[in-house]
Length: 112
Image (tube, rainbow, N blue to C red):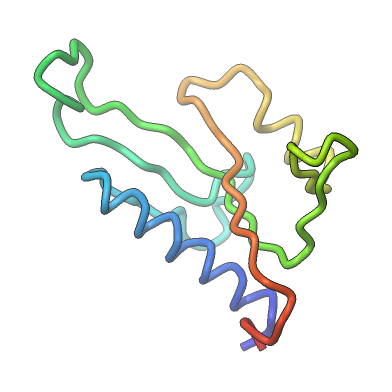
């Protein structure tokens, strides 16, 4: 398995663990269907809580994993280069909101 394959799997496992621990379903987008920069979906089954009006809330995810953790000049925000296509896909008007989820790994041999 290549380093990139490992990073892809780690990003999915991380998002799956976070979603599951919060009580949501994690649904990966399999195969070559990632045409609009979406790797997975997180959704609530039913209402998020008893005060929620909407049912089956969901959000789409673009998953990234990197060892290049770059802080900007104010040392508060992180920078991550992504393709213009991915950027435009994520900021487009969408029926379902989409976010970028980034897993930062240490620069040691974690994924080798």
